[in-house]
Length: 174
Image (cartoon, rainbow, N blue to C red; front, side, top):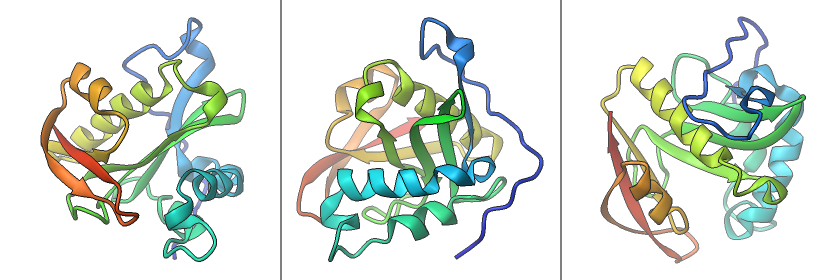
């Protein structure tokens, strides 16, 4: 498990608008906000109980801490407003499909959903993927299919998650 370090803060620009006042929300690297890992751990354990909950095979804190890189996978992203975390996503290898780089752990706190935060995180993940030199980005999901198609992603297949739920795999050529 890597420890997160605070240095060289570099916010990642948001290509789209998340709120009416887009200047209030920024996408930043997880490594710059260690203080939110406990909150995100709780979110993950609640949202994905079969995997991260009690008795599940996952370790949310360890996964989140591993995403404190800046220039190599895995890299965590945060949607922040006034030092409060609104949502998160990461670039990593998808444990279900083994596709890399993939957007994993995309989660927006329920009270902030439907405000464009997931779209801002996806757009920033695309930008970061390009900067890292990759030409494709993947995501596996059960809920974002329609939104991904609207954003230019293409469905490439189906996936069965570790909790036996079925979803789809999408690719975005960059």
